[in-house]
Image (tube, one colour):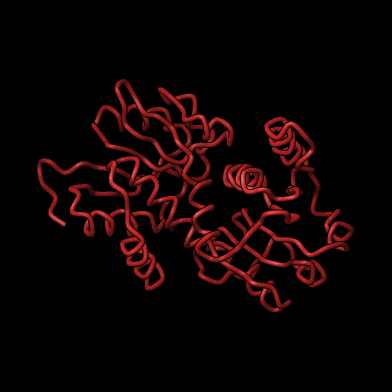
Length: 286
């Protein structure tokens, strides 16, 4: 890749960002497509978030990705927000427009593509979501779109889980979600097997070897475990799922496809399945 006077810059803002694989995804896409775009990671301290957004626009950046903890905090500094992102209540992609940035959520369609790639169907299934942050919102709204029977949101702060459940229920126009705390999981998991999405940071470096739930009885009730962490490639949550006989997947494909959708928004260029497969191989080798 040659950096020159016409190179456009995109990047990731978050706190922290040092663990990210997004530069690998986007710079590989630029090499494959021939787009003159360079992508970097920017560690932004919370007190500098607004300044970072204004500065990125002033520096003529083409777009930004947004990660923890700014997927909701960034919204007041945007010129527009996409309708789907409004429903999710979280933004992870900013696209330059006249006067500022427009916010999108590519986590939701990215996870949808990942589920399809992995052959996982949630239609008619009971789903459990561990965590209630920005990614959790995308998961819950996607479950509604894909026809899941219902979703239970489990979070250490039950109030936060209830807030997300209330939002989803208003969108659905019916009782689709309910909130619970970790202390209620033993009773909850005494019923049918569920598809479980692990959306917390537990298990991510430097917390490798940890899982948000350690009770072996819980994992006996897991039908499919989807950990949205991508590094390490096998988390403790995934190991426990597989040990109990369940399928388990990591967050690499969601990371890949949400990045591809962001790249398509920035460039207007569709990424082929062949190009996506090449980037996935690079991710898995890294």
